[in-house]
Image (cartoon, rainbow over the protein chains, first blue to last red):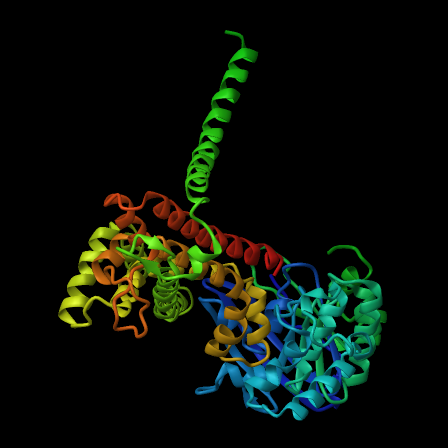
Length: 271
Length: 274
């Protein structure tokens, strides 16, 4: 028998929920990948999703900006709201959701265009045309992404000419340029150099007051270092849906987890 | 025969087969160069033909060739690229799409003499454009369409999916993603396909013979007839009026097409990493 009821540390509901999720189920075709997920992602905080590979944490992340809509045959059941509005409600355009909920991927994915054009991509989509306005957005976004100093003299160069870590920060700048309210990061540091990892962790702390951040990570130390809240996902039996096992303040989840399975994972007994 | 000997024999046969291709190519090039080089001069490519159009230079003929090929490129590119975008990004994959692809492939295998005939019937006669650059370019579009369309499809499919995600992840619509992220990323390969198709069109004889024919003057408007290099070469050679000039024309034509192919190679090499 699977335990689908997860544990809540009592004070997690103290802050204001940016994203509220209740009884969420997710299907890839006939396969029920996630079941009964209930969680509040708090505004102005960094929330980490941890768990072994295939535990549904990235799938759940992709539900939050409707990226899964791009995969044919996927289906969501249950409630997910952004500032109280149903993300999956009738007549809601996923494009509008993604404008407010930006996403960073594991693989840095700059467009084969100049650094400047990469960052200006989003604002241009929204109709910003004036050069000085774009210049200001590009500079500001690159500064927030901790990349400005390294690229300010080579803005015309291809984004692909940068190192992997710089490319990832360029992608962060590109997303920040559209002023998202939430930033979803899907293992953003797994493919890049330590210096850039440090810079990304720094910038996360710097922007979290303005941008609510959710990060999926395999790196437990990273989750412990950067996040305020941690959610632990687990698929206990292959072929069965994954569940959210435990969610709470990072300090508590890591030091005194409520659930035996969380403790086992954190202490490295599996995964 | 020992195993070792069999191996050596097989290797030798393969070498000969591979070598034959190279030998054929270089024989053709060498033959044209040896016979054409004497006619080739600055004057040959910059002056007007004289006499019965067999003496003198081929300047208007070179320009006409570029003219009709360029015009055909302008017709082909939007149709081919948009069709490819539709097939790869929008159409529901299935029978319909397979049918369209099969049609494109079949179009590519229609003999050019038949394409020319159809071009003549449609553009020259039915639409009343007469023998003209316009009719020729339109008919050459039949020839170039499948090449550019398939090249564009391949180019779009080779754009990594995470490039698309990056765009969608910022709240771009599908069309914004296709037009501003996918197509620019695919552009080098698309351009390579267009240039290769232009090379095919520049060397095409049958289609233009039917639709542009052979007026020797420089076509000033798209409604005028004008002789292109393959036609000039054909007429000079088959009527035996000036064989050296025919080879000279052949050499210029080959340089033009080789040049186009080299540009295409250069572009695809330069952007391969992208």
